[in-house]
Image 1: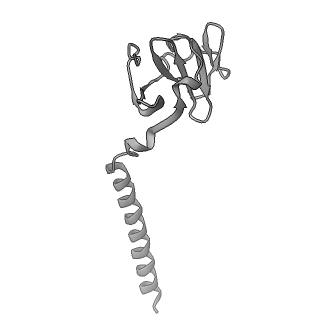
Image 2 (image 1 turned 45 degrees about the vertical axis):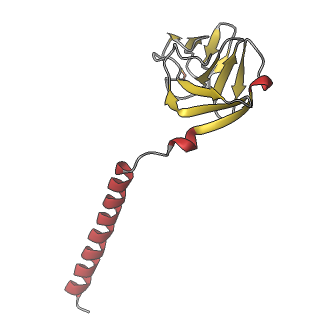
Image 3 (image 1 turned 180 degrees about the vertical axis):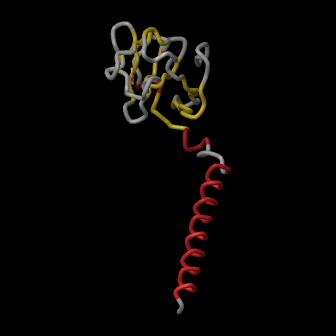
Length: 144
Ligand code: FES
């Protein structure tokens, strides 16, 4: 094989490889993100959660609040840079850079400026709680 033939084959192979990677990147962008079913998580029975308290579910990084009249689920991920927040007397504190959130998840002091995310939650007839980690709800959403 001549040197020129060899270099041509290497160039074609490289171009093909780059093209394949580019196509894969485009396909990844076009396809929808993970389906909703991946983000539906069952977190147990409603009666397993104390009333008028926040319960931390570490494997999902969420806080569930249950009162006699409603349930709400807040993300435990700080909206500044993603550290896991901790429950405090007045709400939630971020151990990384000191952001503070009130008990509704509203950002009170920075550097985080955005409130904690709230997730849609449902309870079925058997009392099993399902949280949709892919569906955000507004502050006024609470499951009656
Ligand atoms: S990550 Fe929470 S304040 Fe920076």
